Image (cartoon, rainbow, N blue to C red; front, side, top):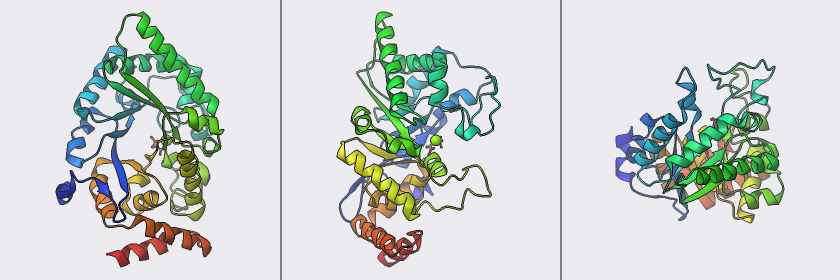
Length: 324
Ligand code: PEP
Ligand code: MG
């Protein structure tokens, strides 16, 4: 399938109406990195660091992590990599951590909540990231931030760790950008100051959608019940786009929907300028973006909403069929 898109591998994703969309890949293991050049991705938009923790039967050492992160950045060959700090809990349970008995793990003690409550592992990971990117730019992203204060606290950990590293005489990265996932509806309504403070925001559509519709992403009984192209969800995403445009906050989308061509062009049509997805999806998504007038598609989406349709999918499919 990758071969089919080989001819557009180096072509930037520019829509028929001239909009440039950045296409990045999601990764989590070193083995994913060879897909960077072959997929045509512009970088790694989401590196899920928890996978390195999940594939072991004991806590990785800091030196091991430094090596892994260094190799990831070397394999990326100067292209940007966004490292997401540990997103554990809920569906991702570390075999060597004391299990917590929670009635609703998806709503429970997970990701940044664990990172802030038990900062030992997070500090170790931040140190590893800083050491691995000495002399290079580093981009850190925190998962599952639900309110400004959590981001502030997490960012303070980064600053503190940088100070410690300097004191220890270690080289530090050339530049550090610190962003967050937006995967709880609450964060979309954080004070304007939050958006002015954060270096970038990436929508985690998988979790955001599950919390928006209150439908468990793991539960077969409900997980396909609500369409991503539901007008309420798209309206909500548009509000996030507006907020970020207003505050000049770089915004991307990194849930599974970014890798589905029809969903991806709709996200681009409502103003997402950067999408991160499985490497195999980059070719098909780029191909559809190049054939689509995103401005016209935006009208189609808004018209369907005006007509009171529940999902814009039928109208979008008709439009895409017509354009060929
Ligand atoms: C998401 O929630 O959309 C996301 C990208 O993170 P994960 O799938 O790892 O929860
Ligand atoms: Mg998530």
